[in-house]
Image (cartoon, rainbow, N blue to C red; front, side, top):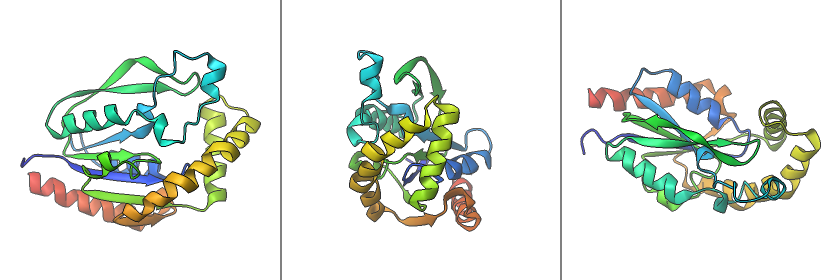
Length: 209
């Protein structure tokens, strides 16, 4: 398909800076050119569980993501269809009733800690990127984000990091680095890497015009 979108996967540990890269790429272009699809949108809805049970789930394990829905919606976008992207409420661990309508874009950026882990997603990617940042920096960023945006306490963030975040990073996230075409240190602060990605996207967009 001549107008088939280009898919760029950006993975890396929590707080690595992958979201910053994805958003910088999106904001550098106009409507219909670049869209970011975040893995976080596809967490399983846990509304059937009591809130206490929801809070005890391992959200860093690959099974926490509805990969079937993720893959099917990405496949639909690649075929030129419109999708209704789920929205997730991280304060109560359920999907919101509203969705976001995503239409055709020339470049689709998939962003999330595990996007390079799933073969179903990797086979649809044209470029695979892994963002590598020191663990202490990543933890500080996660701590700050979860307190500010997700209503978490400092101790709950520390406990989760020790019991699930770090072990799952070592088991599933870090090993996915081997699938990357490009490894970027320091995330969005790496201006040279971001500029190189923009140059590549520019070439994709020029081909379609």
